[in-house]
Length: 330
Ligand SMILES: [Zn+2]
Image 1 (cartoon, rainbow, N blue to C red):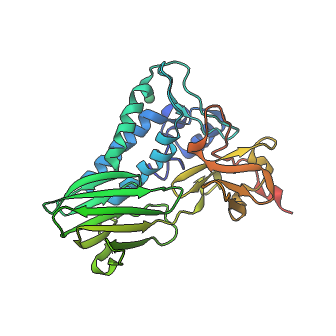
Image 2 (tube, rainbow, N blue to C red; image 1 turned 90 degrees about the horizontal axis):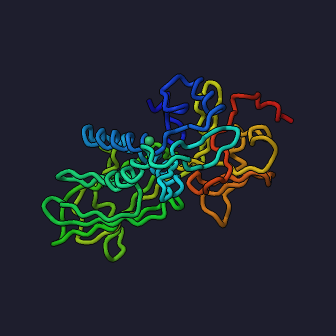
Image 3 (cartoon, rainbow, N blue to C red; image 1 turned 45 degrees about the horizontal axis):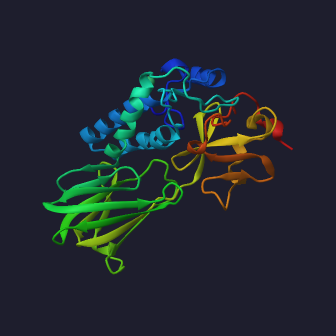
């Protein structure tokens, strides 16, 4: 499912929610604007992934909902009082925009609040001896740390910044248990973890840090009454090819965030530049996190898909398998 059907955003089932061979997904991204039935199908993936995490204990099942939180749930424009909501996300390779469906009170109007309410249930999981941190979202959780009341506060500007702080407080002093973090599938460089006590002294060495059999990064040890863990997850630009054999269609990501291109040149960005080779030419905008210019071009800007407003035109998938890219060779 993940390698054959799921697109860079986490979305799936273009052309009226069909599961189909890759060449037909490519055709659907060329011809159609019904690229992903956003609300209902995100809700389904959230529920499936949550249950797989609970039943198997495996960290990998948090990767798909992470994509969908950012690129579907939080990339939706506001619904109207008449029940109009984004039904299909539009990934059409010849230009797309976010539009609410013209008729109100569809299935997706009903699932929209359900899936938003599901997000807090995806952040943490708990066992007798461990708290599992699955999603990187500002939040607070109260839990039992081996019989003691405990509280963890997650403070973060992720995905704008790579470092996430976790304030841990145990009522009544030290408790021995594990904090476990999902190591995201998009990590390209090594993560780092530091644990400081209330006075700012580094106490990381006092913990047994390892990766467990189910793929979680674990810090096991005696947690003092108050401490702070700093987790840094280096995000990087990447190019995702839907069909690697055919070198396309292509989408650009930064960590888990899908980047869509705002473009003012003729036709599509794919007609104007060799998108398969622009990664090294993409430079961050110093003013706006997760915005990237392309060196030598003022007609294109990549920014997070979640930032696009209603009716604002974007290119999120690029038809790099439609044309030979060597036409740009000098
Ligand atoms: Zn629906």
